[in-house]
Image (cartoon, rainbow, N blue to C red; front, side, top):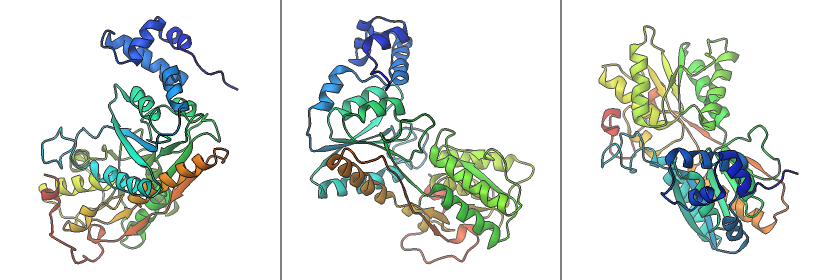
Amino acid sequence: MRATPTVYDVAERASVSTATVSRVLSGSDRVLPATRDRVLAAVAELGYVPSGAAKDLAARRTGVLGLCFPDLVGDQDIASGGPDTPTGDATYWYDEVIRGMERAARRSGYAVLIAASHASDDINLVLTVAGRCDGLVVLAHTAPARMLEHIATRIPVLLLAARREAGETRNVLDHLTVANEAGAYEVTAHLADRHGYRDIAFAAGPADSPDSGSRFDGFRKALTERGLPAAQQPDYRGDFTTAGGRRAAAAILASPARPRAVVCANDQTAIGVMAALASAGLRVPEDIAVTGFDGIGLGQHLRPSLTTVAQPMRGLGEAAVRLLTARMADPALPSRAVELPVALMLRASCGCPEQPAPGPMLTPATASQ
């Protein structure tokens, strides 16, 4: 069994004193940025949980469930307050997951503590939240799995939108995701089988996103099974925002051989691609067909409306609460890897007939302002 790391181990790994480690973890600004980064890297690598946080984790119960995810501030261009406000397009998925979690938690008698981490404080934030709740949901790549494994010895921890990693300790962390690979396979197969498209490209999300990676796997599998060319790496890459979709479209427009269809890793990417194509005078789907993934409400209001793979976003939040409360009731439960189903929503952006809009219609360009 692996020994629990101590503050001395962290200090040795970071080549600093134990006092410096304590200052970093207490949030003191009396530490050079480079030193702080070394200490936090050592904490992450070793999976160290400070004794104070460990004591907090042991002092049950709080009646609170925690949710930690990366900060929403970033490169977004559906935002009423400008590109640096956290009210933009990346909030769609998070909002639905949070609503589902809050609703299920309330039914179970719990409140939800929500925290968005910045790259510089994610480790401290996760430890702080963990010390104030009875169960913790953490979005993929918000904190190192090794640290979460240590936290999970004291409270249930569920990783959201994350596959089990190589070397991850079994029977410690629960995992919850959706059928990303199957959904991407289905929409790609539809483009090839129903519409006869042969040159199909993939616009991926961030390189470290498990969801994007699984969706690309499904995309490649569908093409390979049909004898169609399938690149080893995504043809284009965005960052799950409409701005990222616009950049992917710029690369498409600059290519000497444009694809006939583009499978996008999420709906925001697809909306950005559609807006940029429209601005360049190309028609969707007549010139280039476009599909998304997630099923955000905005997609059905666009013209053309967005073909997408709908995932149960609120269902993810509800399932997370069920998994956490079940483990709280029985800590001896084996770890679970739960995958929720998805559904293909056929609309006009792939070439299917347009459906009546449920409300005001938007052009992709208007939606991405």
